[in-house]
Length: 140
Image 1 (cartoon, rainbow, N blue to C red):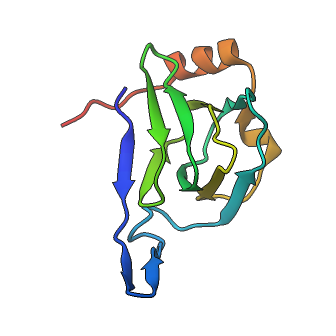
Image 2 (cartoon, rainbow, N blue to C red):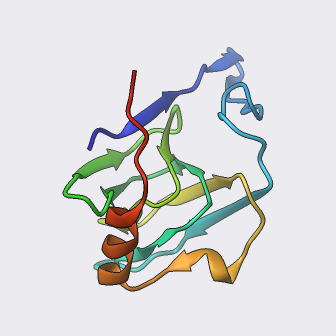
């Protein structure tokens, strides 16, 4: 599994930097929800779930954290997010775990759907079962 990273253009001048994220331009979907995680204690692992239908982009706007992504079919990767100019695209049916948060980490998540508690898969074995039973369309 290869992570899909989005590089964001820095705009600004001598006063400082600015990154603007526009739906369906910089972020490959219409953004319906934005939330951010901060104040995570040392040693904590967040996430530990997948979403059936939700697609997200994660941006570490300050500090750093490590993502472990898993497709449930043997593909797994880790990526360290440590700059606000890079976003991690997380497709639906991807197990995610976030760890190794720096003390100053602010992790922003942009989502293509509103919150739906029924969209979550919290049991890893059930996630893998669902992922392996999915119809995978052949690539070009």
